[in-house]
Image 1: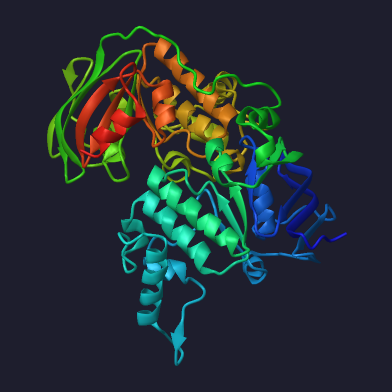
Image 2 (image 1 turned 90 degrees about the horizontal axis):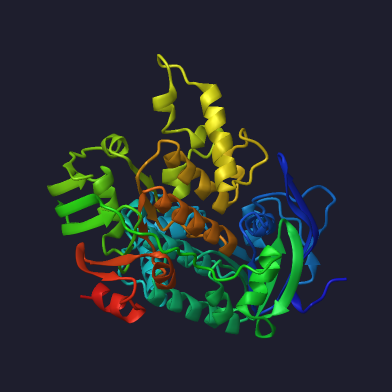
Length: 498
């Protein structure tokens, strides 16, 4: 029976992909005018459930019903979802990078005047929308791909808010946002709730779920576990519901003796983003990098890796100077990069798990230009076992894996060429607490094997939990490097604003 109390009712929803049952008779109900958290490990089915609600995927035939505001809704595509008052911001942004900010926000709904696009009104309205979210630094006329990842995320959020939807979905919207931007988004969400808008909020940072949500639903392995008032549960309670077991301390860190210097960077400069950077990295060490949005953390790693041009400076690996002009030079020197955007920069989504695990190692295992499929199969099977990658087979397309398992495939790619220096750039963004802990444990294992890790994160508790030292970057400059024992959130933030 429909209930007028609810904006969304999804009952007995099942969805099957090739080789995987993503959802198995899942129930999900969201009240009118509430912020409802949706949590679970990667692969639990959260994004699949919401994409069914948005018409991106179709539920299995005859599997259940969807009701919106008490009425049965048949949503076959995103346009129909929008007509029903739904709007979504997904974990992986669905925007047009070659178009302007304004064109992205009004895509499909461009205002016209006498049959011609009213550009003046569109840019003016975009400016008003951006200002309402305190995004004055974003130019409405700028091409989307000229913006940072964070700014692009904020454009996606602005687009969703602009639709005047009565049901909004936010799938990991704060993954790359700074604390101040996250607070601003939460204020906006509360304001929308007070206007009667229902908000579905997916976030692996459980502290944010507790900060802003009224109720929370937990999924596990494609099944419904339960729905709780946020005031009735603790973070530990939710984690136990999500993983089916006690997980203990989230951050995993072993005391591993540091070895000799494996990477030395001296007075490195690259454009306006890297200014006179100098630091050392030792075997057996995790060196964290922290900075506010646009500080230059990713750009520093891209420069060392050979993606961005080095203007001046010196890089030494194992006490020997190396000349890195392109990524292949750094790969040959033993450096691997787990990039900030795993889907666009770390994986070939249409290809199989095996193809992705051996993307780099294949150039070493091939003979006379022919791929050694037997060796690749053996490497992939070992990676799946060592990294606990959940996949039906080595031939599964990597796009069908959960975010955490996709991240493990990216890591496997570099372990298969025995990289001795690994750059982890926001490597735990968008993955659940269980998968995060697996990655932290994997990092400890790598350190025991005399490898070294540079770890970028925007989340201070994570940096303090897993790093031996933390370097802080502000406007392209390293303003300080603190040992684990002396580092605090206050000290790091102070150095980040120098």
